[in-house]
Image 1 (cartoon, rainbow, N blue to C red):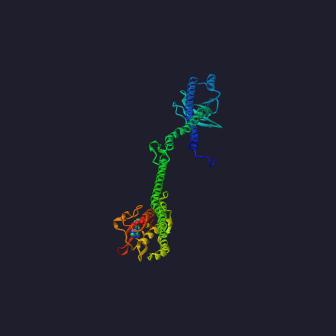
Image 2: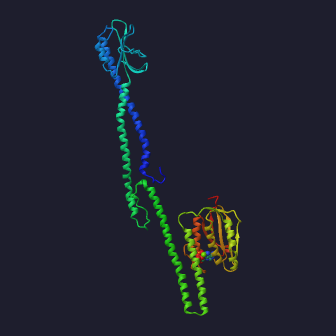
Image 3: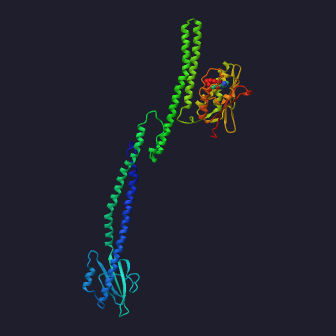
Length: 462
Ligand SMILES: Nc1ncnc2c1ncn2[C@@H]1O[C@H](COP(=O)(O)OP(=O)(O)O)[C@@H](O)[C@H]1O
Ligand SMILES: [Mg+2]
């Protein structure tokens, strides 16, 4: 079979059916032959017994004669196709009349009993023999009468029945295969409504298929299609949300930029131009950050794999090296940034790039809210059934009433002092979800600042 030939239900069904059908044909042939032979035997045996009884009657009527009359001989030897053999013998005087030296049966039948039947072998010939015994009234002698014939005719009859019926059975099998061939097409007609249903869909219609039109055998397939639709729907929603978010995020800074440009144009004095440019710089930096965060959130939300790319990630190494990376930023803001925890060996499964992204957002927040001469601590600790990664600072913190809402997209407590988009914690939350980690908010040390903790399931437990 060529590899590029598409699979075919018909071919599949036929190849599955052909071998059993041929076997059934052969089996039915064997069965027919055995049955036919059986019934042929029954019938031929019956006429053999009748022949033996007839011979008995004739022998009685000709009692006293040593030989059978020619008329009787003709009657017996009439059928030349299936020669009948006979033997009439007296137990005292030996063979009285015969056309073949038939042996005595292994057991003599009782006098007057029904003839017994034996299969015997005479030289190369297989014979069926009916034997009966009768008493000679005047002497104490017993006369044994046997009549026999070859088995050829019975076999011939069974063979003829077999040859007569086999083509019919074969024809039936061919008819069944042809019906299967056409039946498959008829059966596949059931798929037409589904094909139409899908063909008539609008591109954006990703609702579930109408299962009432779907044959039960196909439902696993349509359920898979529905699941795919659902994922596509999510993806589309995500894209729409991203576009709306991006428009929303960029409209404000763009309006601000335009305002500043107008201001500078209207008032060309170097001082005010300089002031406007400073605003422009701040606004465009904010827009750049917001765009970056939108992309990060989109990446974290990307559907498809529900779990982050799974590798073993050593959180200790990641946190420690990231802390040292941010030391210059912290120094510039006069913040004491530190890492507390083991230097390696706390491993979770996940995506290192995403985990780092979460850390970036947490440390960004902590550094911007800790305030001058504040402290920021990244800590990592093993807990009973988890690994806790926490970032805390000594800033003003967030009032506990807002904690449940931290992590909603664009949510910023009303008293937020620094500029921002409200996406940082949403990114953190989404990344945590994808790592099956829990996010918890709390106060920092001495009841000051904010502490954000991610509780991970360690690799060994996962
Ligand atoms: N370390 C923190 N200290 C105080 N407030 C914080 C801290 N981290 C986050 N917040 C508050 O949570 C809000 C949402 O944070 P985030 O999602 O990172 O957005 P953004 O930083 O862009 O405002 C912030 O606006 C701020 O009010
Ligand atoms: Mg932030």
